[in-house]
Length: 252
Image 1 (tube, rainbow, N blue to C red):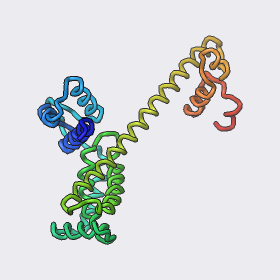
Image 2: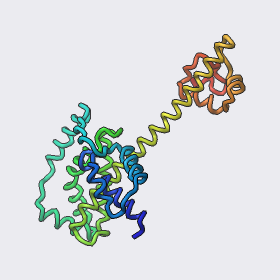
Image 3: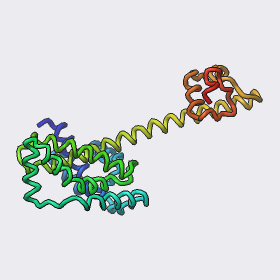
């Protein structure tokens, strides 16, 4: 197997193991995981930086379990109360429904979805306090679960199905967190840019002792008209130092 492919597989395994351990892994466990590849110091630092970006702690004391917000606790309790109304299934029944679901039987797939709903809740707790509401994590996990049970024909043995389902759910939650974080970073950059434009407008307005026009601001500060107009829109037109241009009048 290609060394880089194997590296990616081990890194994914390490990440999942850390998730299941409260987003924590010891230095010893990390080194042991990569024994067959023998990482040099630079590559090891890259791995640790990657894990840190995923909010996974490496080494030191294990982090204390993060608490849920009151809102999350209320939702979890109500949701778990609802799940308690679902029937219980024995291990034998679960295996029988799994085999039937592998064969494409819709009713069995539906039953299997019910069986794994509580597992989705447990998985969601792994991703607590990572920028996404527990309610949204569970919702995304349930969608992934419903999709996963329809694809069990890809597995050779029923014993492999649970791992496939759990991986599918975890992947969906991680993707949701990534999308949310990416969106937050974009919003932070946009806000920073808007604030920079406002500061320049305020400075120029004080020099002129009046509001400045968009054209004046663009010329003096070498800004694009679109950037200034977008900043005005984002602010909700609450800019004392800039004259609202004609194209935006009536939109306020």
